[in-house]
Amino acid sequence: MPNLAANGPITEAIDALITLLANVPAYQAWIGATDPNPAVNLAAALASISAGEIGTPVASVAVASNVLTVKLREPAPIAVGQIVTLTGPAIGVQGSTNLCGSWLVTSIVAVELPWVDPLNNPLSDPSHNPYQYTGTDAIEFTALLNAADIAEFFPDGAVCLACGPRFAVVCKSGKSLSTKSIANGLQILNGELEILLEGNISAQYRMNAVNAMREMENAFGSIVQGIAALADTDDYMLIRSMEQVDPEFISESEQVDGMARFEKWRGLIRVSWGLDS
Image (cartoon, rainbow, N blue to C red; front, side):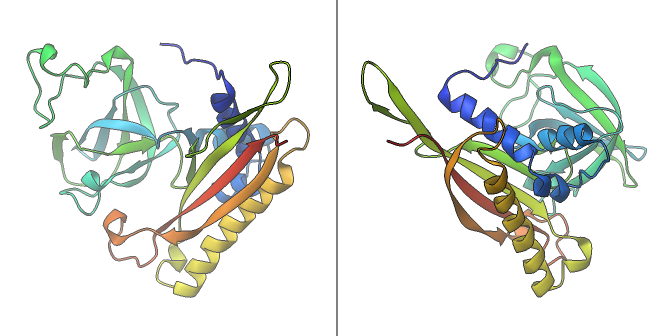
């Protein structure tokens, strides 16, 4: 199924903000995109930014002979040799397995997923639950790991990110679109969008409160500063104002490594776009 092109002020604004963020040098450096070729860095940055939701839902997970097999519920921009990230409490320290983290994709195949009921039991009659079927355009990928075999299971709320453990989500806010009529049917459009940043703390700082806080605030501030510097230059979108919600470390229940004090952080940026009269 082909993707719909961005159309209308909200979707166009989201698309423009994703383009702006992906071109911010501080954001590219933060996700580890440091290739000499700028086009490679831009592609990596775009792959790390989602619109409206975080990642692609995971349908099932299994481990056999040190091979991790993951089936996704829909297509994803994933290629062999790419680093992807699995996340979600059902496959983390709070579940019976700990498969959260980043993995190197070794193979990809197209799959047709079975019907699954809310209790994760395959159904023989698809009409019982028409909302779980994804068709033949889902994918399955494998990665290598050193772990005991795990029978295929269907985790609830697990997602796959087509990037490393640092990413962004651009979505609508409570005031995503406002209009003001001026004359002769003309209108001024503006609104607000939000950028959610989630990133991991470098391994050497995960038990160090001072350096973990400093790394988090340095990264967050540099990205905010980079957005402000690049906005309204060349063909990038006009941003009227930005409001930052101070970044915070995630709770222990969401961590991959339950022993780390400071593993990941999240920060929110509210962006006002458009013109004002």
